[in-house]
Length: 234
Picture 1: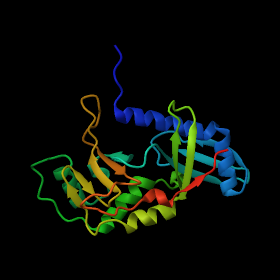
Picture 2 (picture 1 turned 60 degrees about the horizontal axis):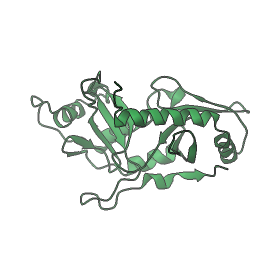
Picture 3 (picture 1 turned 90 degrees about the vertical axis):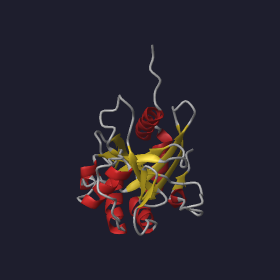
Picture 4 (picture 1 turned 45 degrees about the horizontal axis):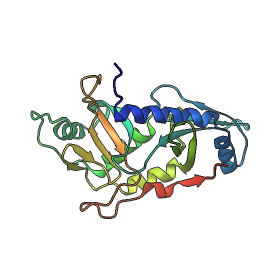
């Protein structure tokens, strides 16, 4: 009897396929060579839980780590980080807030106000990581065909440009909504969950929404995807 895959599992699988196709699909390399204006020696996948998914190596010896997100830009967003509460900066007030709101630990003290400066630290940590050797220099976005056998669109943005906009749009203080803690209209924390089969369901997951839909609370959300440049695939 086969076990049905969860939505998160399917997203992870197609994401891994996209990372592999970035290395092997000929028109991807051609599009990136045209964008950067120099020949590429190879594109490889970066193993392990790193913030960069692929490494682009050029003939001139330069190397560019990139992070790729595959699939729709709306909805609940892309998962960009997962870690224990205690590993989200050293701010104990933040830890208390996450335990109270996301993990529903009633024994925790009343939530405190977490300022934008802490949100900025969290954003950098969760999106770029702390390992300088594999910090993404660019973010990529891909979509694939229905069979997940070929990348059909490829877009790119410099990480400095992307992060500047993410931080500029952060709330003055973190906002709580039901079981989530929001840093901005595009970035929020939630309990990972995953059911009985997940080894660490109480980890905190960071979710990034490129193009959130307007709501009463946020009638004009930032479309982060507008920062990306689509590269022609011929």
